[in-house]
Image (cartoon, rainbow, N blue to C red; front, top):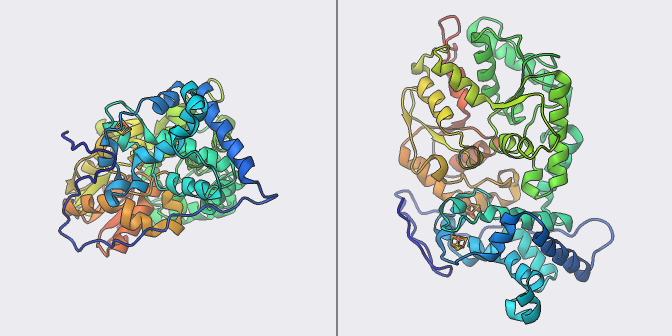
Length: 482
Ligand code: SF4
Ligand code: SF4
């Protein structure tokens, strides 16, 4: 792919958009709030930051390299959805990463120690830390910059380091803090009880009975079931069609008694990834691994949630956080795509006659390589599937990655800055429905369509399957899903 390189101070080319101009109002990115408890002085906080920066030297090699080798070519800026949305210094990936790089050079290298303030502004007062919060929470962590950087630098790793430091200081934005707390307390980011979960499952079973005239079960807490399905809680409580789709797949395969969900662990979402807090991320993760062991499952079947799957499959498993595992980790889209390839599922595509496009969630496409499977499911179940370009590992972020989608206090920023490119991409397809495999992407895309009054539906991949799959030779008996 050809790309225009610009210097860090230059403005990248912006594509024309045939639609009315988007607002140019300043975004209101969440500002840091002082931590609860005894007030930490600037000096205390500064000391903590410097210690964290110095620790980079003893940490993963890759981060050390990112600290030392940026060529300052500006390519990352041209490929960043945030800088595309508002090409100004505060949103430039290099300058954001420099917030940490500068301190690393000053406090962790011999030359830095020798030259002191010649390394640039290394102050660490409350105002500067507030800028840190704003800056690290205006990166979606999408890793698109890393795909194009000639030196392979992944600015999202530096962003996560910055967020981790901010978190240690107690300055993580309140909305994010709350999501992590709720998840650690209740096992899910919605704070739903097992009773609420069971009621939601009962409702879904009734819906499926109405659609197909037969009982399609969603087993719960079944000891010894081979497959333990873990969706994002949104796919049970908010947009439950994906979970209905998965239930229908098991039903058609004659495997209704071989899978289960858990009334305690029904949300793969894990915001410790987004706040940069490894201890929180691992604590959240451990409960799910323990539950899989307790149930005696052979397969942990992850749902349509990119970051949940990434943590399980690309981080927890290879890094052996909890040793060797007695189960395999598979994504539900891989499972379903395999069944379609084997000819075991049939569809009535006319049930999805409107043009449908697919938004690749960054975590699935760039970080896990799951790109063919959702397309196979959509092409099998939709009459008019259209690609958006660029796609797969080159796709643009929805603008709500890195947990930003959950932050209502920065909605204007998400709509008018970070989501601009995605909006243009969706419009170019002419699609009337955007399918995506991530609750955060769904929320961001749904809000984008509403904000710009585009009449485009948003939902999951298994949602489309659920509408078209044949059960006893017939697709769902339903005409409206809106
Ligand atoms: S991070 Fe990579 S793409 Fe960005 S300026 Fe540095 S070398 Fe260039
Ligand atoms: S991770 Fe995404 S949002 Fe963050 S700097 Fe890179 S391209 Fe921009």
